[in-house]
Image (cartoon, rainbow, N blue to C red; front, side):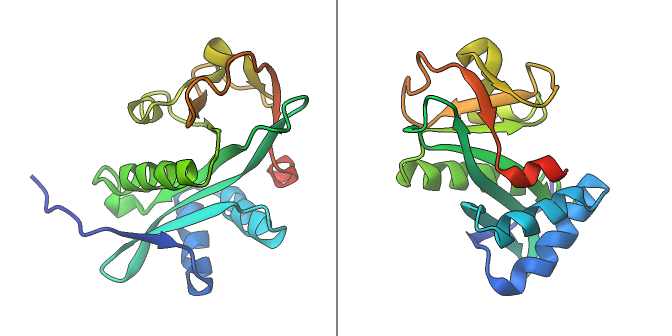
Length: 174
């Protein structure tokens, strides 16, 4: 059994920007997601951005940006993208801690629901379920139903909500 990591979480700070870029670049084998975070930050569309720190180093990152569904603008919807953990520290609880803490903070900030495109084996353990089959809310991107997921942070807030969810415009540049 490995040593349990001492993981500190906090909101990103200016000195973290380069490390966030490198972690996202490494985790996704391209600069697209890393550039996305910079573009969201630059357009003030980065709603919440947390980093995980181990031994004084940024080892993980999670970002959230606003989303909307035409006709349901009163809902406070957020998209999780991207989340990245340093390759040497994956499967050691860093990502799980980032997700749990960020969902708790988003709930405290009166966010209604969170959407993501992610691994169907990973995100359901945090309460995410397929969005189309559970809520009738679709992504504009061609993705499998079980990969586009949502979690309600307020019970039944997505009941009777249907439609196409819109990401921040920066996602169109991916």
